Length: 408
Ligand code: AMP
Ligand code: MG
Image 1 (spheres, helix red, strand yellow):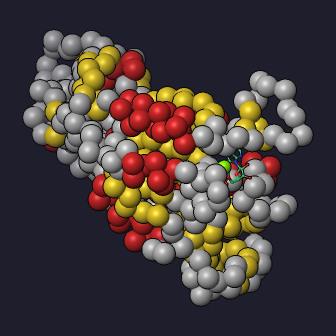
Image 2 (cartoon, helix red, strand yellow; image 1 turned 180 degrees about the vertical axis):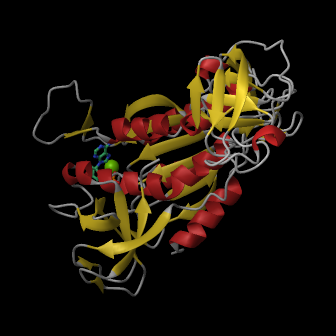
């Protein structure tokens, strides 16, 4: 069986980033992946402006001023933000100016209000500026017109939205969202809306995976529950691989008599690239590639196993498919464990729990309750997975552990 690292390498090699794009309005761009590079014909700041409420002056006039020899200037103009000043400021003069207001000709430095005393139409400078240009935001000092502001592959979040707006990008070219088909296999499964008989299990995976896809920028396409009947499974899978970029199915990939997925994938022409990974939970993972480019992830049926496989592998594959620029590595951090952690040591073991901030330091705490891959109940207490490598059977409270952070 291959290692987790080997599986990651194989999976990422199979994935090609989407090239198709959507042109959308800026209002809809949050959470999308930029497919163009962005630059602006404008400098930032657009023009010299004041960083303070105070007085615009000429540095030469006041550089000698101090408390023994305070210098007094005539206030000849008042410039609020949003006004284009017409009057230029001469030697011996000052203008009242406010934060964000455009500097008039002649002014090269701002004295903050707190360092002045105003009497009628005159202002006395109580302490000199520290340097020529103090408290002036110079035109182009943040950004020179024509340079790159954002690169293709950027995830558009609040900062990027601010930049796109400032660059007057009212429409934005983004990669199209990945389409991901989701199907649940198993004779025992029913939808949450159906009446539960004693022998049945409610299909929770469908909903967990849908949320996972939505949270990672994809479009989930529900194929519902499929009975463990080879012909029906085959039909559904054929349709799914012709509809979606990725297909996620749960169940039917173990070695049980009703586990048909692998043979069906092969019959449909899929090349099986991963068939089992040395990890716990999540050992029965199948990954196959089809000629049309679709990648099939046959995930284990147990609810925790299915999600651990998504968090560990599908997340990175989806990021690459989406066109996000990055190294496609899991978000691993090293923290102290608050609890004793244990593993049989034979497979890379993922233990679910929480990263908690205690006295300014992140620590890992175990999710209380059974660490059983069928126990989806204590997953609600989970925002991270502690990882025990092969050969490590325990990590004691207070020791360092590697943790996969699940927060986006
Ligand atoms: P399988 O891999 O098909 O043998 O399934 C392993 C375990 O996961 C069984 O106990 C199933 O009942 C359970 N299971 C499979 N699919 C789902 C699902 N969609 N939702 C919840 N549990 C499931
Ligand atoms: Mg099954």
